[in-house]
Length: 392
Image (cartoon, rainbow, N blue to C red; front, side, top):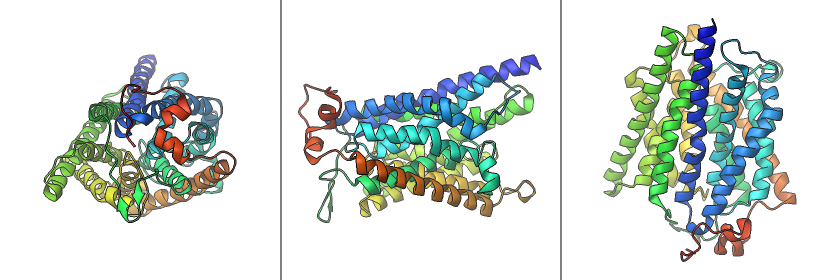
């Protein structure tokens, strides 16, 4: 008993380290995709999200999500920190999508509310003690590591924020979509690969135990399928964009990989290798289709977070009902769809209301002048690349 407890605790701590490695992953990815004049502000937002969301979850959110749940399979401190490591990821998804025009202070206020109340409520009705579920919701769907609970939650919050804040200045001119290129491709690659590596702890650690042969096999299968879906997403994206444009766009290929990783997150412990390839392959294709579609609707998303996290969070959760359907264990497409829909309605409605109210008192959107100058100056007083000529 003690040896299993120690092994599971060590495994949780190792997984936590990989998940927190995703903090610099998000930071580098976003820093590379925005213009140089906004890099310091993006990095500041990422650090603030980790600090504020984590503290809000520790002090308030964990109890809302899990009550006084006692975990006898590992140290309770490891379990609390493992759950804490997840909370910032949902908000990182949102922060990247409103980059280059969202001000830090109101975004930090929303981070506090998300970490303390919104995200823990979603956890409660899916992974937690379910006291809310028993009185309001009736969810019975499979989402191992959060295709919906984390990724779609962040995506719905992002959609709400974009609708309130609007696009970057100059992004849409009359009927034209102005291309704003990434500023640092090496940082984009570094950030995406850090996220990819972090996903092994994200999904593998969510199995919860590794102290028996069966549990170890489940963890290994989960990580294997996770990586396989990422590979399939990258390859399907690369092939499709080459067929369409005769070009290999590394930013799209990486987003395709991330789309595959998001999609597999709901059920990597349930799939065969071929299942995971199909889930990831479709995830990559969805990214290629969704990116221009969101632009057509003038939903300005500098990092493609809606396409990667919202679209593939939905797809990944529904895919469990397609590839791993098992009515004896309650795994059906209808149950998966119901979980997606109810959490979507809750998160979007509450997030839109909170952002709208905050925006009434403290403007979320930076002024046009500040956007032209760059948020590094107006928000941070510290430019990431002071010797560079600023891009308009």
